[in-house]
Image (cartoon, rainbow, N blue to C red; front, side, top):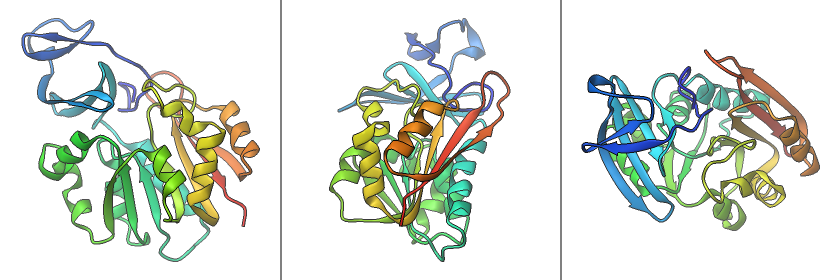
Length: 250
């Protein structure tokens, strides 16, 4: 998010200051976010903090996302649905949970069938189920269509017998710039093969990115996807966010 629209287009180092986590460049008083929870997990440290009216997630000292906007997360879900050309009650897999914009938006749309969300950080799942992020997703989590899967997405798509009509990926900064070790493989040949594996014929892959990536469009075509295109979302500062769309043949 970038600071203009709440997406992850930059990495902001954070340091501990008097019990808080402070962005470099911030100094005193009300500028210092309040740390609500800090967890160590198998993938490193994750922090939930409040900065004014916003909730923010920090991973291994890098600012990942906040609750300031959500336009591109909603477009991710809507664009996937529209690309399905009227398929009745399609099942969607969203990866990952983040601050919950994509889940909440999908659950608010009665046209979706089963809504599965995969998230590997147990702390993030807990913040949604019984923590501060529940204010964004309580209704969605109570929806009988919703299920939460605690797993690594790359492992899941290569092992599961489940299939879906749409796969909406919002992992790290997208294909062009990953900040968490291991996430880059999701956007390479093996990861894209796994994505195709869990999509039903004619299913749609939608991938959020911190910037448009012609190289990733080529990767999608090389992986056998068709109807590859990119939708851009203007942001307040910097390059636009993007949603890459592709269809599994069938």
